[in-house]
Length: 93
Image (cartoon, rainbow, N blue to C red; front, side, top):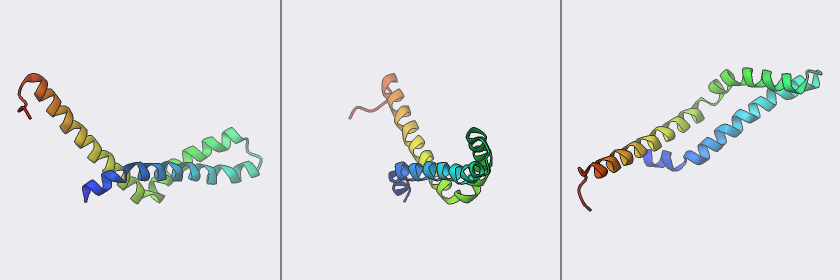
């Protein structure tokens, strides 16, 4: 099951980033209609969208975090194995 989550990491990460960008746009666009300058509207969208995105996209954030943790675990294991081989502790294959 954890392998399945790691396989979907690029898709989940892309969806999460697109959702966060869309949230900024959804917040900033109505502000520009109210004659708020674009840069100010984008900054407000970023500031308001940060905590709001954590609440709205909690399940997607959890999947991305789990996938990143699994990938980092694999990388740490491979790095430890390589260091052991360089020290001469590794078993020949």
